[in-house]
Length: 318
Image (cartoon, rainbow, N blue to C red; front, top):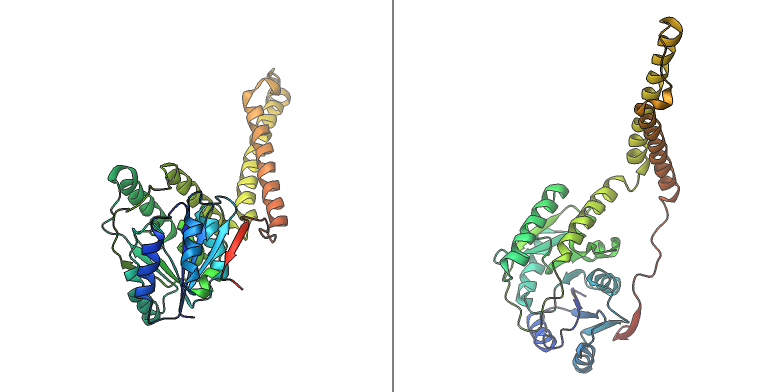
């Protein structure tokens, strides 16, 4: 199969007819599948998908038992995708399906692992989406070293081997290029794509997603650097902190002994010196850091096996 289109959705019943029709039109030359993941919609989205699937063998669908989020929807779609090139896109008609054939040809011609869309002229509110998104993308670009402008763009193309080799959790869907790079997939390209205003419904993402996005970025950068060697991080800080505390306490003790026995100078109790308690605290913190690194090493090889989503129903999957 040439192409898989993975489309998460939540309450998008009014967009699905047009989206499906446009996809069928632009993909006529290819063998393809359209995988809708209904992330617990409470409108008639699933009923609409069932109706469309009756007359369209290219439509496949997964229905979640309730809303688990876009990341888990992509996880489920990636697990089932069979196309050699896997596309993701949003279901709200702001992305253009007509971009897919050209992106597919670029993927083949340049042998990219990932081709990301770049919404240069984004048709969203400036203050609540555009400006925060530019800031977020700048931080992600500088911290990851991946020179793409729009990590948030839903329209992306991946080699099948990429989506099969990464594991998404939390809200990591926006960081798939970083996860892929950490797994050795370094050929990441970018293409300008068109973007339009939403036709139906309202956005499902609030301002909280930017706070969560930055927190996820910090987590990802830490994990990508130290996941396989946590002792290098925790152990280093632990040893440095413990040594600083130990020598501080040693200095305080030696100072008292010198004054008391060599200089015959009466000296107050060590326990009345606040630096003594600071030294003890540093040694305790250092020990805790070291133990954290040791425990992390013990569990380092364990993998995430928790059920991250539950599927209620399938359409057209064997």
